Length: 151
Image (cartoon, rainbow, N blue to C red; front, side, top):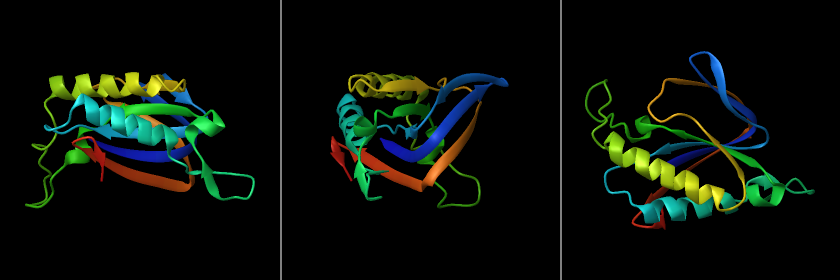
């Protein structure tokens, strides 16, 4: 399971030109699922992200987590995170999980994040989405979780 975490001042997701979800300060998380991923990967990744200390404290040091600042999280499915671009110029997406498996693990991840008491909003699985956000920093972190371990 792969997550691209962007620290944002705000993020608004649109589907068919209409606002679907919005957060203020927190994380925009793009989540990709591959064939080998399990519910354990979703749980471990959710714990890591909720406790990731990348918000600044009073000394401007990255020392605070999403939980510490009572931040919000927007979770968006993103199968293209598993694009394979080794051959040619057209990406292959064979490493991405099939939609049925990916959607279930995406939903598991959302459920796991909600257990931390955070405001959690989402995109719509499989939809064409547009996201308007202000990256804070910019700070962007990429996490991979394989067999229940963060790499």
